[in-house]
Image (cartoon, rainbow, N blue to C red; front, side, top):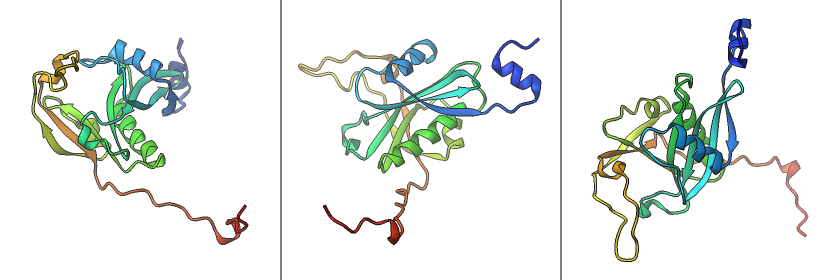
Length: 187
């Protein structure tokens, strides 16, 4: 006998699909702490977080923030800093989150989005979401530490990475209101 909402839906032949939902950074970080393979929760620099639900269950999260590379931090560029899914997440959950993050950022007026993967990772989720490799980042010991700026080093810093961006990055077109809806009276 099915017990969960997913099992009941499946048993009844109903289609259950991934849904996006806004979540807090606290909720996203708790998910990352429990499920991410090599990264820790984010402490600073985040802009927004999205969750992916399947039925009534949260199966993945994405955290979007300011670009870590200061040369990319122009106010119109965001970085997907974390994408994390549970072991029982449906196939393509990562691609779903990458695509939704880009769409939300565009709706917020953003023009560019980047993310990074370890070179040993396949990048299949990013390719599935329409992203391409546009750069390579060489491993460093502790690139952010310096006098008066001691940063906690994580093993992921010492690995080569690829930088990805969505293909065909074009700013979304703005919709103009019909002349009948334009307020012509200035106050």
